[in-house]
Image (cartoon, rainbow, N blue to C red; front, top):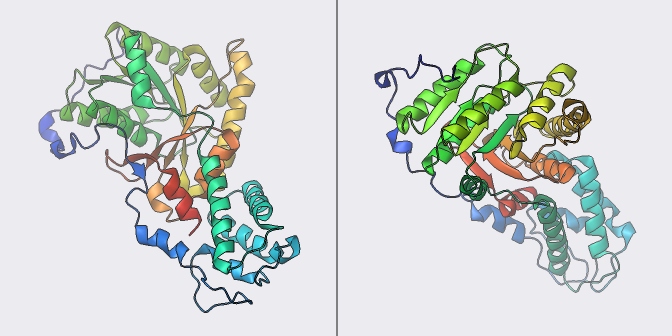
Length: 379
């Protein structure tokens, strides 16, 4: 029998009218930080502008104000010794924004190599060089080895007559189901048919939570455009996902979104089950869902998740390499300018941050605007 549950939908009369949301997400996602105040960036520019020999001035703001700790004088060559107190301050600043220690050290090395041995006629010249060097280094880290364009890749899979499959994984309580629903909403708003798979067969209430989202989305679009595929609890998630993808293929769905049970990265049986699901079904995209709010703890989770998938993949199916392909960072609206976790995750895995969750509503999903994140770090 099919895994489509006949008990739903709820009567549309039970649901509030959300029709105003339709059409708000068509096309590529907006970048997080697109709407951040330009004036905040300009604060950084207001560093000391002064060409007198001692390099001191009463006016200084923004992150680069601590460069005034350099024993600076006109045309004097910058040395490693004169930079030492500045680099300590920079490390403190980056750590306060949740940048991992390893990356802070690398950024300090970058700054040192860009300034040492050079001389500057003005303090502004020195800060300008410093800012450019750090900005370039951060941009390079946040621009991963490969880019993922989901809408383009969905089109490509469709042209080959098969659905595009995304698997969502991560630890407990980071907002996997909610953010899966946001991704679903975005795809529906772009005209695609989506099958949502209740692959969390472990946590009580997980399937019902997904069903609630799917009912709301079907009410917004149509039952033909979005369905939930589930078989309740206690089933093998790998086999369930396999059946669902086959079902989606037969019924011409464009995208399959597979929810999985939240698990701690050191829970070996559950990590083995996830690895089996990924190895058996070879999704187009395996997304790690992590919280921006926990900072470097999310980086540790991601590293261990990735390693665990690699370690268990050989025992799941010989010859396959299960590995995280991209990151969905949730609760990004709660972190102010402590955006370091984004830098750390991309640096350590080399994988892109594809989605950023910025609230509780379906349209609260964005892409990562590298320039804005770099600006926030350099404030």
